Amino acid sequence: MPLIKYTRNNNGTYGPTVNNHYYISKLDHRRTAKRKKGKNRWDITEGEEFSVFKPSVENFDDWYCKENRCIFSLIDKGDVILGRSGERLAKFPNNRNDGEPWHGYPVFTEDPQNCPSVELLERWKTEKKVPLHIIVRIERGSL
Image (cartoon, rainbow, N blue to C red; front, side, top):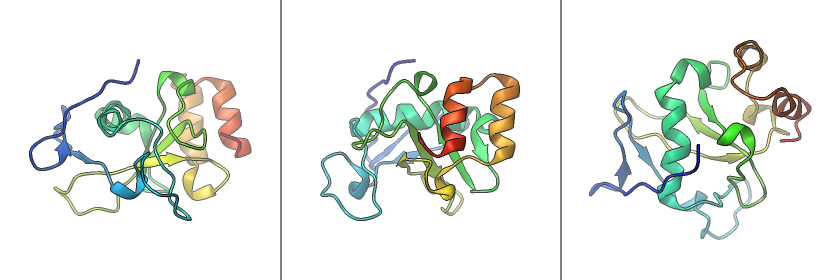
């Protein structure tokens, strides 16, 4: 599935998704933001960020990591580079209050907090949601 460029709502959010979730792009994670320590930046447009979030939140049970309290997402089975530093995996933390929009950013899996849980990776393997070579790279912390 290619990236789609969505248009922002009047209040600055994107959405809703089919399950009534909204997304907001954060300035410090945009591709044009100045490089800050600990802040990964998208290499895609603000409108394309929503196309990374949307399929994962609409298939929540397939992509939600209970251990890290976040949704993970890949585009085209990990073939699309999402971040300025070559990241292919995106993370959308659920550290928001109910009703607030989600936000997210691209991540590398070398940090365990940015890595899907063993349980989620096993489910992806069993259900063939993610190619095995991508799962192996996630497990090694090299994606």
